[in-house]
Length: 567
Image (tube, rainbow, N blue to C red; front, side, top):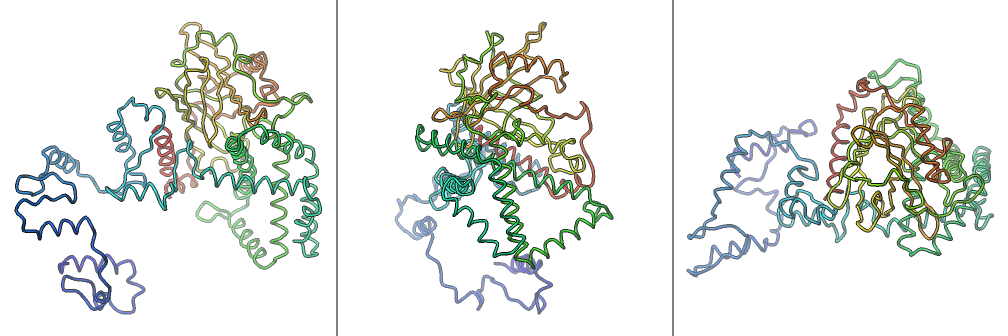
């Protein structure tokens, strides 16, 4: 290391820590070409086998030797030969005057996308069937290290291939179901009671909370029993892999909804608290109240136990309400094989049972493009969102749905909706395939290790252009004769729809036989929309989200998910 590079290293290493040093930086010694006492005691590591081969080649005096080490083009004298195209690329890069900004963890998304097209072919089967994922890495073993850690793929943004592997998901589902069995008193009732009472240590507040926990379970008793009865039927008639995949799909959304509700509630309290404001963001009273609450939780074990039981009770009550239809059947209808007009509706219908005559001569190519969701019955969505859109694109043998959403809705969170990091929108992607064996109008949707049909049941056309203007979609997931999930979407090419148009969509859905699956007026959620042309939300909270890069993070996640699903 030269004196100039040593000086640079000193500044680079010491600069950030200068204020913590007891002596001036000049008093510290650094590694240089002449060596130093501090580093001389460190033993030499083993030689790199590839670099060592190059060194052996250089020392070998045999005139006809051949270097089979690091791969590189060489001239007749054995020196590295740089191809003219590489020199031209270097010149083009230099002329662009790039600023050497750091790339994201996955590299340059455009480079990865083009590289995959170059390697596999733009319309190749691996790409059109979403069978390939790409990431930019260091060359050689660096790439292998990124892909596999301890012989296991550790991370993916690809929703078709979830972050948690199937075995881990199965273990979690086992534990979750066992927990629900205990708290619903399906098994040993004494044991269930002990869980909530023994933790109270004879203290009044935890005991009261424990009683509330048992009450939260008891009011949904029949729904819990029906759920476990259907679950047992599904397990008996389904292979284990399909059973656990479907159950994990159910668990994910069953848990997601009750987690969201406290966040919205706290946000409303935050923005409803009186001022003065700290940094034009948070009311001082809210901060002080939080400090007092946290202090009380730290000091009082009884309060901690009470709050834990209350939170757990609220969670069980919310899931129980979703099982018996009291938590809003529009977006949280959790029961397996649920009932309609006091009659249990089992399984899923065939496409021919719900397909309408308007689907004759259906053209999937014309179905592509932007749709606006007007109403839904679907527990994978949240009624607190608004301005929902779907941009559907075909990809050879598959399809991609760019799902745009904003939230929370102004009516759902009157005080805090415009403070949300997704008040101006966020995107995630749904993926699927088009099976040639299916009737025209059936798409296959995939996510969380499950695949289920997405039926296009009905379409309306513009009488002049023949373009599709409205559509009704119906998704249904069934395992072992038990319906795990059903989803219904009312879509329009226009962001706004009159009440009369919506009423006609309900009538067409009813005619298709979808009322038992959630298409009636009382089972559908009307999507809230801001007026067309309304400006983006901009306030001190939105400025903060932009300052800390939340908008960039959302864009990166969307790009990573899209590339993962596409490739």
